[in-house]
Length: 231
Image (cartoon, rainbow, N blue to C red; front, side, top):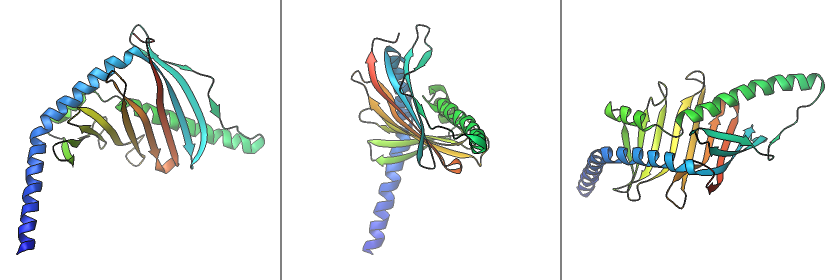
């Protein structure tokens, strides 16, 4: 009897929590859109360092570093720094085979990085469109405080963009994506962690993409933000 009562109370609590979360969804979607828009504009005032590390089968194969800033026409500009390093290719026949494989992988890596760009930063109008279509689902991380919203078919059929937000601070906590490169079997996932600059601007400090079928991992870190070099 006690177990049944406890189970009913738990079901009632869960149902109530989900109902509140659903009621909060419109407000949370608005928070996400506002945060993305404000941060997108504020970050144009900054210059920063972008470091991209590529791992194949767990081994670091290359490190590329760019100085990033927004030009006066609002375009993101990236200039390679001296801190760029790539693994050397052996000579001879073995080297030719390795070079061909390296070229194929380089093409794939370029596609993977372009894929990341398609999701970052998320577009407010796409988020609103998916919400308006009634396709957004919500997960409670911490009741009345932290939530995770999932936006299916964000960029292409079958993908899922998920955004975690702290409702109390109105800040993004993290972002994750399940998608694919050329076909649905070619799955990739990536995780994004956000940090705040002193003026409240949020930026993706770490973006980590994994393509399991290729034993590939790409880690992009943004650091060294300085004001005054942007618009």
